[in-house]
Length: 116
Image (tube, rainbow, N blue to C red; front, top):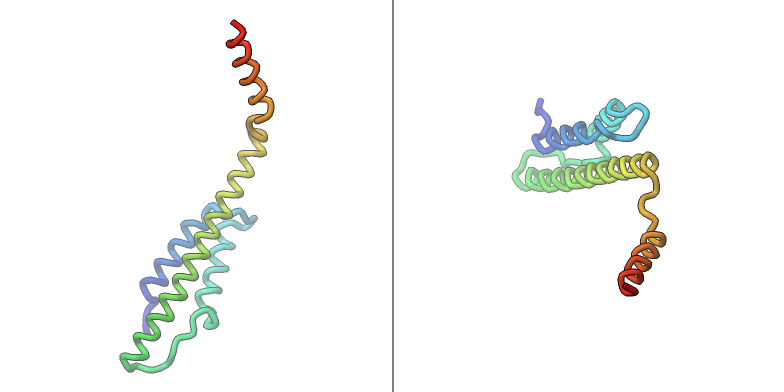
């Protein structure tokens, strides 16, 4: 029996590391469960049966393409996490600086300086 391919193992480790901050009620357990399901699903990476060098090269290409899709999903997870953190900070500390109010304040102070 063959072990798990090093690229796939690395992909799973990255997913678990990113999943620690994933904004879901179950958090890391949800991410682990979903990634294990995805990695075990044969639909996600359909390798060709056989042992010839041509088939092995084709399987390597298919596997690398699937790992690339997995890395894309991890980047999307990171984006989701960053968006959640941004929204939390925005909610916690307010909407930010009032641009119109700041502009009028700066214009007023410049006008006051010019009058002097």
